[in-house]
Every structure is written in C-alpha cells, then in structure tokens.
Length: 178
View 1 (cartoon, rainbow, N blue to C red):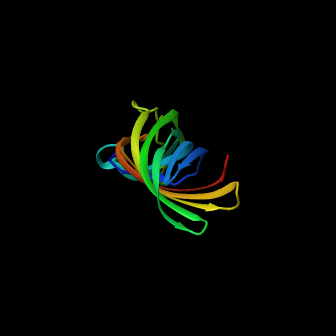
View 2 (view 1 turned 90 degrees about the vertical axis):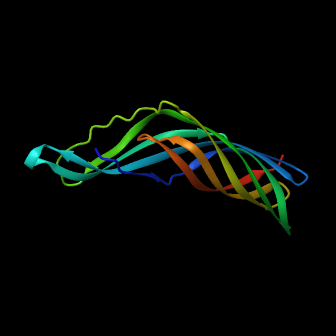
View 3 (view 1 turned 60 degrees about the horizontal axis):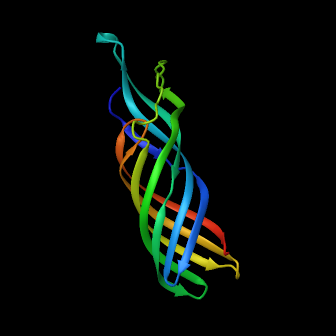
C-alpha cells in the first residue's frame, strides 16, 4: 500500500448543551456524540515482476467520538431580539471503542483489502475552538441558538495515522430557559 489521501466525510452530531448567561458573558458546556467516517484512497501493488498490478482502492472506516466543548463568549452585538456572542474554548475528546470497517474496494482489480482497524494508541485528544453564537428569543422561555465554530486539534488519531486536523461545525438548537 502506498501513501494516499485521507478524507473525513461530513457527518451528524447530537448531544446535550447547557449555557449560562451572566451580564454580557455566555458560558457554554456540551456533551457531543459524533459518528465520523474516514476514507483513504491509495494505490496498491499486487504480484511481482511482469505480473505486477497497480490499482487504486478506497477504504472507509468509522468510529464514535465523544467530546465536551467548554467555551466562554462575550456579547458583541444586540439587534432587537437577536444577541451575537464571540468566544472560544477547549475541547477534550475521546474515541469510544475501535474503528469499524464500513467498506473496502479496489477498483476493478479482483483483489480484496484486508484491514482490521484498531483503536488508536491514544484515544484522547485536546483541541480548541473559536465560535460565534447567535441567539434569538422565540418567547420568554424558548431561545433559538445557532453556532458556527472552527475547531482545531494539533494531532488527532484517525484509523490510518495521526494527523493535524481542523474542522468547521455548524449547530442549531432550541433552548429552554430555566
């Protein structure tokens, strides 16, 4: 197998979120579960000498990630019922269990890839985030919240290697005020 390109396929996340607003500050804590699918596309060689075949293949594997983003944001703008906050924070993250193979394919070669991805040696990573938070008061009890965020991990274990990793996340939620 030759070095290839690793792609992270966009997925969905779900979880619980709690926020606390104190004057112009918004403290935010979440428990988020994400199922991520990684795909590596690479070239494989089979056989030897004049019977050597080079073929392109793709392997997809998936794992479940748990993260706990903790952020602090500051109110930068209020327009009628809309509040806009800007902030940042830290993101501890764990990989739960092992990576499971979703598919493998070597295009037109008739060969199979034998891959049993394991849980990475370090299932914990720490990252950071920058985010905007838009909050719209639906009524006295409910708030619509939208958060675009940029996440960065200096090293993140994937099923194929440890890699630098940044991502963009967009989440929306309806919050109930206590």
